[in-house]
Image 1 (cartoon, rainbow, N blue to C red):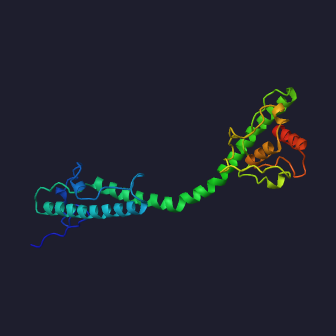
Image 2 (cartoon, rainbow, N blue to C red):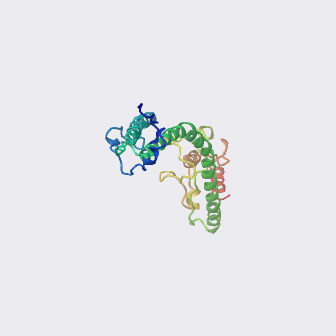
Length: 246
């Protein structure tokens, strides 16, 4: 008699009398790992395109083994023989399909979504940094105002940087005064002044500052501190004092 038709995607046949002989597939891991390419796509793995390709190959190879296994089991059941151990278990097949879909989804997310999220978050991060620096400086300026009223030896506190970039102080530099060289790179918003910046430690230090000292501070903070080209040195010192304690 002609053999019964076998559906390779399930362990069922068209013979309704044989289906009662089917038992659940055993759970132990199969021997498929030796014949299927290793899973890739972990964060430290190959580039996204390679990860997707490898996951696709793994899925296709496992699908072939799965179909072969199911067909062999169904054929054994039809013949009345004990079914062989599966080449690939249902759990292994499902896990591989899920993994392939995850790799493809993660690559799509990295290419299409992450850049948009980063672009959207960047202005928010900059606004938070500015707000934090401004709030900190508000408290620092209050302390400086008290210090200036206390006496010439009272300590002044440095401010955080609020404005990104480096100020071009050439237009503010008086004739005969050397324009200070800018830093190699602008400090981030919220940064404290470096050790080499001539920030005044006391009111006495402030009133002894030179044109270059004040210009270096304005340059690093990217803030004119209301100084204009026509200002003489005493006026510049007064404006720096007001800027520190406004």
